[in-house]
Length: 376
Ligand code: PLP
Image (cartoon, rainbow, N blue to C red; front, side, top):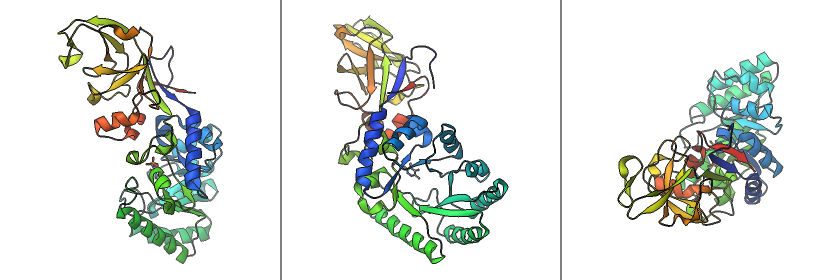
């Protein structure tokens, strides 16, 4: 999104941090290639900019959810391999094939739709099989998988569909020592063996998301598929930050500074009553822009060099910060950091997630509405 005038709230994306994080992930990955997961507009960090920064730092491939997302990257001139892994069977597979986009398949129905599109386009489709090894969400089920393999053998002979890779996705990767992780690994190996037994030899196989990339070298196979770690957010927060740097900082500029008398209630519902005469700052960013309403009264911002408490309810467009009786020297137009790297003692997206009982993925993808993204 763009602003016609000076934005009131921004999500500032540090592309050097993206590059740093990809280099960190490459170190963890060793010989395995890195596919940067840039779905959902790169977790709301800007898919085109992040893809370029990640590729420049040595990511070899890009992963997205939909064909539309992949086509947007191609339209921006990005030529790296792109995999799309979740489409309905009436998706525009022809457009994907024509743009040399690799398609994830989980069923014979999909495979046949892809084969028809390949015939219409006059070029073979390249596919990755998504095999379900226990997440029980996307991916071919144990019953469907052999049928997909058999159909691929047939379509391979016909020359319409080429198998490039086999992948699976983990249910409990953020618990590296949970036996489910090992069980999924074993099933994945069985799935690869089943393909090979039919003469289907994939060029590469991949399983690890961010959490497995940094905690389980035995899960790395030929390629790793980190998303959240690319954005500098720890995939296993209780194990530390893995030298990653958060790329998104959320900022807003003070729209108004004013006095509130002792005993006055602040914001809807008067959930905060001034215990003394005080000065407050109004930040023009609210739940419509990505500051969850449930955070009300439970978070701080970095303003005027220190952390200051947000008070009262978060509204659609604004919330209020207590500056204390002397106002702390804060003036209209000053910039507040809502979350960022935490370097200067400010909050991090992780803090919001902890307070809300959610994950930082939801915090960074939620900074939308009138929050304007700016890459630096
Ligand atoms: N692979 C697939 C298939 C995904 O859907 C995702 C995102 O959830 C990832 C990899 C990246 O996961 P993470 O962001 O936890 O690294």
